[in-house]
Image (cartoon, rainbow, N blue to C red; front, side):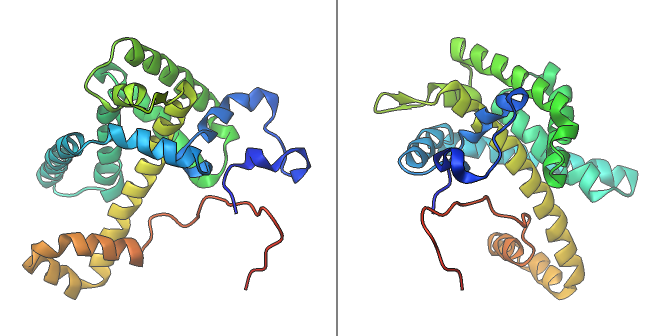
Length: 244
């Protein structure tokens, strides 16, 4: 089995991307759609951008943001869990982590929301204008960070280097896109599904309240019990294969 559909060639029967959508080919240069040795190279280079220090900084910021959103809900007396809590957390954290300027975060959030909604429904055509603006904007940001790096993830990705290899502009773009879509959808769904599970099983909720040290294993169990993603990325057969 392999992941990179470009290896299928012209006789695969899978339709080619229309020329007017060729800009979408850049996002296929990501870890989920690559095979060794490219997969290992991308993982190693991207790992450089996720240092323990950077992850620790993100954890502190996530806690502060979560507290702020819950305090706001407390003042209001009620909230829509998804709209008022689950959605703002990944959108805010991902844009800050990437180094998106504060003045651009509102439109970045708007594009991200539309793209994620379309990816969930598989209706790509409805979101093409947002995708195009999103890509052009990210390419400008990546070029700026390459010329004037700062303390953010995009800068870390464009500077990541191992054995004289760097991420190409398309690979950085694909990684950012992967973070926005995959990081957004999985986090929102985990918060929603996890809350639902704890409401459906009050004895487990009370156990977690009385034993907060169980939170790590509780999250792992919620991921297993109510998976936040229901589809896997595709794989292609190199040769005839028998299933079951």
